[in-house]
Length: 111
Length: 111
Image (tube, rainbow over all chains, first blue to last red; front, side, top):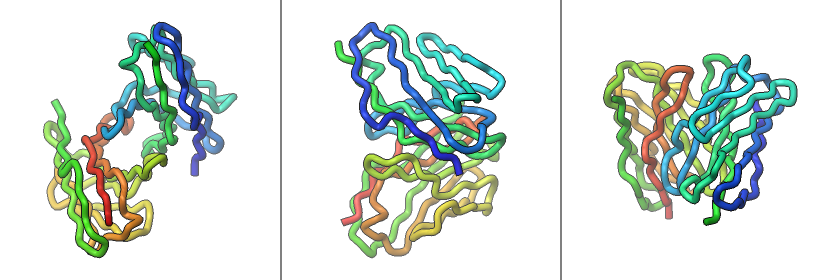
């Protein structure tokens, strides 16, 4: 099974800075990798999906990179805002299989 | 557009009591449906998934069962709850590339 590592410690940054979250996986190379946002007491919300043949994906202030050599995905939020404070989950996925979720990293953006 | 409904939002049950959580999806047909559990400080654990009516796959052997009596209805049940069944239960349906769309969740406390 896939082992997924996301920083367990919360990431604290100042408003306006770029937040960078890391997702490392150890076993099979996923065909896709998804990122979700989860607010306290709510279900995760899908943000972005990146394919193994894509190096980078962008959506508004969000950017995801995927390095299959390093077995790592980075998730960036530029010009961060306090409203971006949440837990972010990565989910590598092999082919048509169900994605496997990491434990997530808590992001706290200070005004 | 597609929507997913999950209820109740919170539930407090005594040990040994039965459980029934219901999830319904609107706006799509023959969706893949999922039940996840998220214990405090833990990641999302896949419990059951279903690719069609009456088709249930169990990922983790435990005190719970699932049923899919209708195309867009997914039910999580237990005959006798254990303390260890406490957690945040999430229903989800799978879109293209298994992007998951989650319900609002049920916080279950077994006392």
